[in-house]
Length: 326
Image (tube, rainbow, N blue to C red; front, side, top):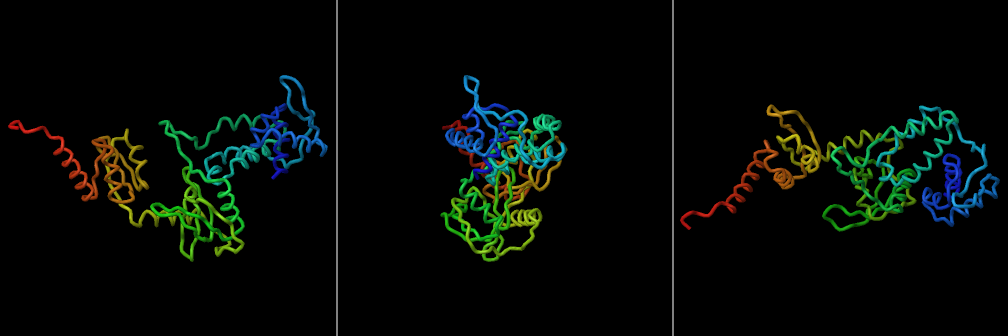
């Protein structure tokens, strides 16, 4: 761990020039005292790092010093730098590792490509936190220690013990055989089996985890994309309600935010959108459509239309004008 930090420190100084101890501490996520100890260690190891005193002082490397890292061509480095800045790095607890890797990739480029690639990366933005409607995408948060145990078990092929809080249930410990990790729109999932049965666990509901020494019972090779598609299809077909809706395009996103999945979408004759959606159950679908008032209409199933009609009738009766004779 410290070796990686020392390499990162050197790369920061190479790429940015003179930096203060405070600035280095912020970049590396450590204390200023730790940075000063690392500077001493680098000097003792022969790395030409020196301190500049004064108001604009800091630490710097002697001009011309270069680390020995494998080189990459411009497009290879650009692909690495732009392919990974999505929210998956946070879902899997790899944010700091990615920052360190980016520094190493930049440093590995030939001198004439380094500035070009660094500038090019500023022109690409992948999966920003907010969309054009200024709605922020909230990524799942998982404790670093918990995520580290989960990640280690997945990569090592060991069984995993998790303290899991399923929806509407008290948290309980479960021992699972981890298959892989998936991140979708900022939400992380652990794909696993338990007693031979397929299981999918939301990472944000894993309260604690412990990697076990036992070997996990799982295939040596795995196609996560295929497994995820199969589990998604199974999830949507079990105990869910399919609803056909007409909605004002301006309220489309509001409607989608309440649905489990969108199965089909097409424009309607009057300028509205016709959507086929999946909801958790009839109660959830009724609540979602009621929130949109006249901007949405449930076309099917008939039971949902009846439920919305009964609710509207009851509300109208409550607020009807008093009888003139009274």
